[in-house]
Picture (cartoon, helix red, strand yellow):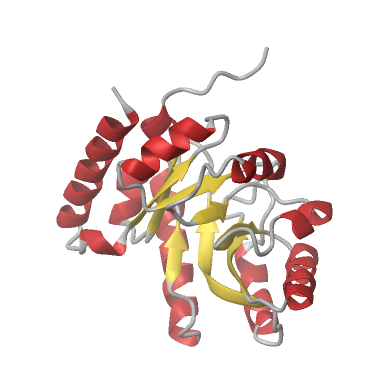
Length: 225
């Protein structure tokens, strides 16, 4: 199937899940995770009406920016961001979705202030407590949010998570509770981002406002041997 056909199929699935959950499908943003897909694939996704494109790797993002691959759609950074790459990302993307430590948060804030901008961010929650993943623990999130109020270079828009494989619904429910609790305490927190190609319809049922899909839209990635 073409990228356009995949996007149409995914949107139909999102709409069905939203209806089942009693939600308005317009509340849900579709992010095309375009890692390892070339500029032409990005352009096809934009032509087919993708809401947002998301890149995982700074080097790949920089290359495709030079090729004008993202013209016509907002760009988000959705991968692990190293502090020494912050200067290459802040101000180049509409949102950084994967802010998983106070050190990274501070580096983004300083770079944004240097540029005279405010960078939209999501805080990454390591909801499964996995050692292999970055992100704040659920307890740390409650400590981090008040600190952001003192920062001038970042705007906290919400939370994101990638749950342990095979246990999505259990952790989606936990994330939904944390998100609703924080939103009740901080009106600026409006966005919950969770759900990928294997579990995005479940994420819709548990309140996500943004899903990040790669293979479901662009096809299987060919990783180097």
